[in-house]
Length: 144
Image (cartoon, rainbow, N blue to C red; front, top):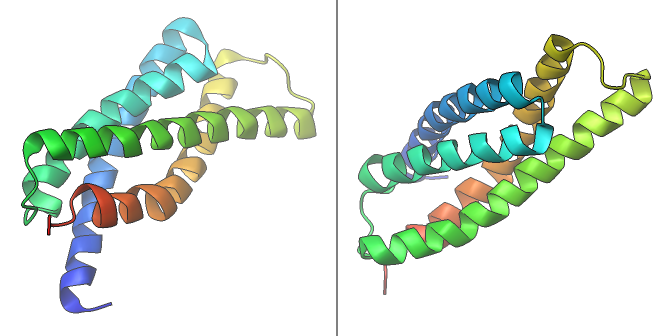
């Protein structure tokens, strides 16, 4: 990876951390109110996605020649994939841990901790192997 690529990857990770923070705050808030894994994860993903798109457009991949409309449409397509991967990965991960450990609908705080831990592991995988690659090569790539 050249210097520009490394800088871009670093900026993408900073953007990802900021948007992940927004995502997790929303997830924890909704889960604390509704105790629903899928609803809270999806709400968090929407919040984080909006924050991430704005930061990436203005700072991370700021050399794009694509219109805001083109970026928004492409981002939405990638974002839908990201939401599906994060939500499904978190749901399956929570179900797997609960099945392996014999946990069910245990204490809400314990389940919240589990949801956030599984969500964090899933988010790292999706951020590196889906979001960054798709944003770099599809969403923010310079138009030819």
